[in-house]
Image (cartoon, rainbow, N blue to C red):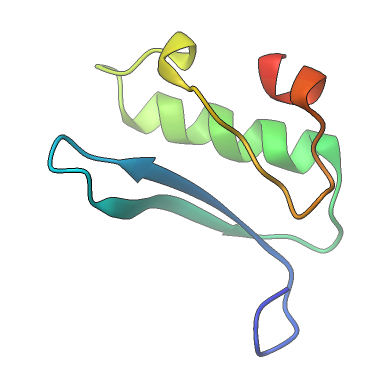
Length: 71
């Protein structure tokens, strides 16, 4: 939840210069696995040169578990 108390999902990447960049953000009504999945899928749809296998880390405010990230 952000300072406006709105729930959101942000997909963050580290570029070749080792800078952290928000790749996409989604506002959601509730935090659930399907929302994370949709956000990540939509981000990859917008970046066809990146493969899901290139993701090395996932974090969801203690919501996501390592096995969820692998899905």
